[in-house]
Length: 471
Image 1 (cartoon, helix red, strand yellow):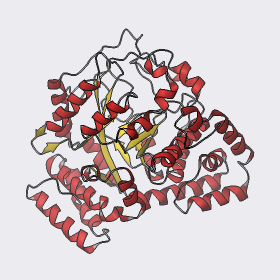
Image 2 (image 1 turned 45 degrees about the vertical axis):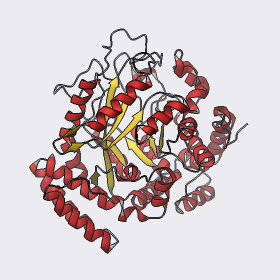
Image 3 (image 1 turned 180 degrees about the vertical axis):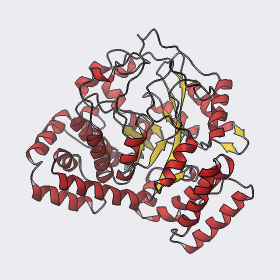
Image 4 (image 1 turned 180 degrees about the horizontal axis):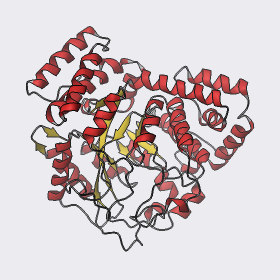
């Protein structure tokens, strides 16, 4: 039985409800009157239900899809402006006891080199990331209670936050580790993490259990209910995601939105972020073995629909995707991207790209400076901002700020000030010139005269050597 406010996985992600949703969507995919009414509702920028959004996903009428894309762009610009937040993943360990059939870290893979960073190696990785200009990391580790216990993760977080190198500092550590206990989520909260991210992989229970045949991750309910335990443990910024390509994308999309609706219903705040990874080639893994892969056009449609259905959420796209695909979906709702990512353990401290410990092939292999330069040429502000989390604007406080339209007086100047830091400390000469011009133009767009004056003053002070201003 479907119950959005239930704490049982099979009730808030109800298989029968998803099947009924998909049938309803198929029956109404050419219902112009209904589709127009849904697009009209979406224009109110308060979101759509999983069933409503599924109708739009099923719709294949070209002019309606174009309307959807236009609307997604409008909503993205209203809530997030032209800022794109930058981050990098940091792989701590690829030891793992699970048997996930789509991941090269699976226990039976005997030809991947197993590695776990020491605290000294963590320090070297962080310095390498700081020397690029990164301020925000997402740490990743396989599930292994012996090699990667929570104590190890907490020690790594402490090390990361402690390193001050030249003008560099990691100001926000997001965490992507396996589902765990309320007590462990409390420990992560006390360690000062940003967002807790956990990909569902697939919401289809039968497929989930087949794809995770062995190990603790096999437990569908424990994994799916992790966000509720994280919220109970005091983490109010959580990030959802599915691995598109494992199961039918229409099923996954409905499940993803149901999960977002559930968090809103139970905790009063939906997901801080939604990620949209697609399965990619990796050691011991052939994406061709999964017959649910999706085209770039469908992928773009999914991004647009997530933005329209969950207008307040941040949307993340990684270097799994190529420059061309990232360029295609940036206007449709993406608000965070990774840059210069290495998916191998210890990959940043080595100039040569390590293949033997990579979790997946990276499609976009440009440097951070190249990505920053590219974004600015497209008219975006690359942002290294971490202010909200450090000012306690998390959970419903962040959502209130977002929904009230005050983002331009807060996040916009913060983005410009952190971009100025990057330009002063790390940018190439071409990127610096491009960025200084962009900052000059973008300062004019800050609505509040007082905020504009203060931001302008801080940007001057950054040029004089001061750092870390925030609204």
